[in-house]
Amino acid sequence: MSDETPAPDDPDFSDGIALSKVTDGMMLSGHVRGEPAILIRRGDRLFAIGATCTHYGAPLRDGLLVNETVRCPWHHACFSLHTGEPLRAPALDPVSRWRVEELGGVVFVREKLKRAPRASVTVNAPASVVIIGGGAAGNAAAETLRREGYSGPVTILSADKFLPCDRPNLSKGYLAGVAAEESVLLRSHEFYRANAIEVRLNALVISIDTDTRSVELSDHSVHNYGALLLATGAEPVRLNIPGSELPHVHYLRTLADARTLVARAQTARRAVVIGAGFVGLEVAASLRARDIAVDIVAPGAIPMERILGPRLGTYIREMHEKQGVTFHLGATATAIDQRGVTLDSGERIETDLVVIGIGVRPATILAEQAGLAVENGVLVDEFLETSAPGVFAAGDIARWPDPFSGDRLRIEHFVVAERQGQTAARNMLGRREAFDDVPFFWTEQYDLGIAYVGHAEHWDDIETDGALEVRNCSITYRRGGRKLAVALVQRDLEGLRAEVAFERGPRGRAALDGCAPACRTEDA
Image (cartoon, rainbow, N blue to C red; front, side, top):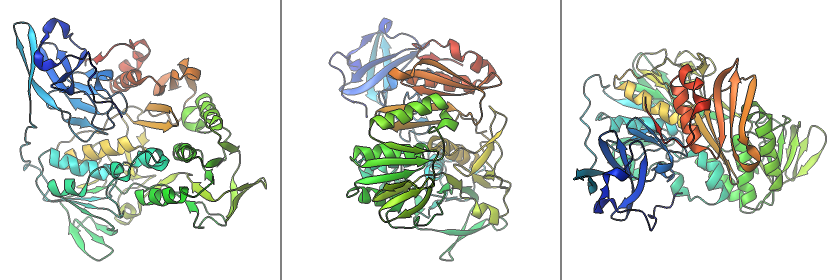
């Protein structure tokens, strides 16, 4: 988290600062009567907003100005300079903003401004909204409906026993023991009550009737809807080998899973992680933080090679090995018993804890039974509407037409899910807003953070700029000479610039290599 205490030499903007010191297109750090703030000049407009992102506390001064918004350097949230409102996930709360006044060439930051109330939405608004799924997409949709001024009933039907949570943190800080459980929840019960969002937990939906616009739960209760969002997410792929159902064998998808795993980690001495994807590697790093010996079993020769390429994958493996992790690559588990895991080579690994992370599958059964178009996910149009009018899908189950690649994509990223939830909510209100956000995700393992912008399912060329060995580089993935994605290590600003370039299409991609890394502004 960022330190929110102003530096001793930071100016107090309430005392006034010379206009000549507020450079157009740059962000000036300071505070307003002790509260950290940044002062921004865009042409003849002056703005003062809170200095830290409301997601994980990143310093916004290190981010990027895009028109009259600022983007967070860590996880690419976006805030309006006019209102302070979060325009893009993963930030859910606004930043503070103050009134700014210029008198005789001196800029004064005055009183803090209150949030402007949203006008109630009535035209084209559905009579009610039902959201199936209590994950990132479902929560973001419910919040967006209220933020956009929708006053009708909003109901989240979640099969989970816990409120929507910050799923990326389950395999990171929460499992490592450095993040408290209450910090993992996206919102509290009080928040949902205050915003008139009904959240029903342990609510298993068993059928959808698109003709009567209703859903039925396992307790035979029925909920009618004016608009419906399917946000059922994905389910872990289960390993079907002898012993895979033993009590010390775990998966990590929900907060309940994480709770159970944390409890088991209190007494475990040695763990086997089956799978070397992002979740498996993050779990390994978190268990090592608890001083548990870790072995990783995976069929590939290099961890994450399909996503990140051989060089970065090899670097990640070597980093884990330096932390004491033992890899068994090119191997599969064939049996699990109370004391160990047996591999296809005959090798046996002693363990008292097993974590399986071999991928997930979209939870599309409800959609299939309802007769929606399904093909490796629920098919949606550019507005995230399914083949049934008034029924939308977002998150891990949605397969949408991507304007950047021309392909249909289904991506299992937390930020993508949240942003799709936001877009789907606005389209339920008749906005007709195409989902065209550039995919983004991040991973943290030990002290290494990697950001990934774009989507490169297949590539034929990889270019590295900088030095991976000193953790200062960007890796560009191309197919047929076209840039598809960029992975970044310790280059936050470059990641934001890459995002903007992808948003601008071929012209932006062509300019990507020529971006000045010190620049803090990108105008349309």
